[in-house]
Length: 171
Image (cartoon, rainbow, N blue to C red):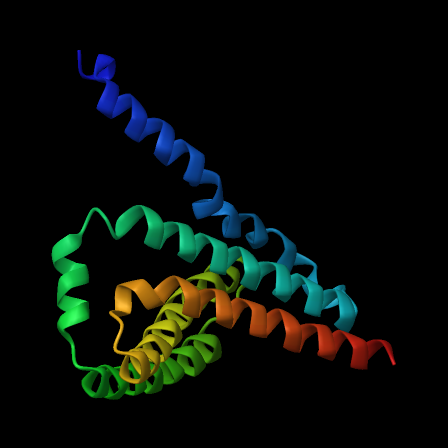
């Protein structure tokens, strides 16, 4: 009886449309089994594709989840930019400690790959939050409207820097 509801059907189609993008970074769990045998150029391209897929996945997750949790978004928007910057820097420091601790403790193939993807999500979300707080302090726009443009800026910047790195590897 619920499946005949047009609103539910529309919601299921909407989630199916974004399901592939949300879980696409999981495809990259297979590659690190032979990643140590790749040349530096191919390793750079691998991490570039992984980063872009994580950015697309995070962008899709924000698009799907932010309308569903308006109270959470309102709480984030009420946070003062200076407090957000301090919170972001503290989270970034804690993330750095977690990053170095986790990779020094775990050296097993598939677990290390899963850890890499999870830490990419966490690190990217913290970094985008921090940059959104900076931009909010400058422009006085709300953080939820700045999240997607800042994420696109970070993604494009990484692609440009990686392209310059690839060009140096080829030279």
